[in-house]
Length: 74
Image 1: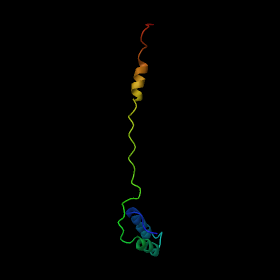
Image 2: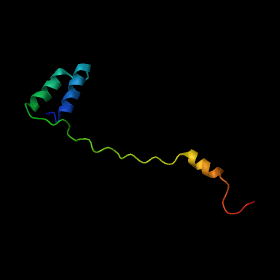
Image 3: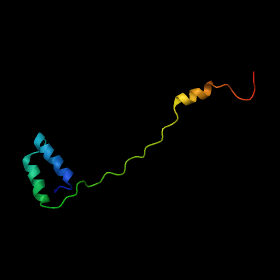
Image 4: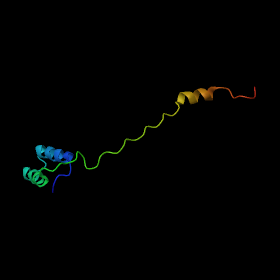
């Protein structure tokens, strides 16, 4: 089975160095890929998540709670 991307080829080379796969397996995949021009990744990463606005701090809420209620004087 040929490699689908450059990243996959690097991963298999890393596994070969660690000893997780045999040299024959790596060479078989490499031979079946040939000199094909491979993309960096098969599925490019999508856009990142948008950052949410920070909520008001609890200090501001506590300061508002300490103020005396408006309107009636007791």
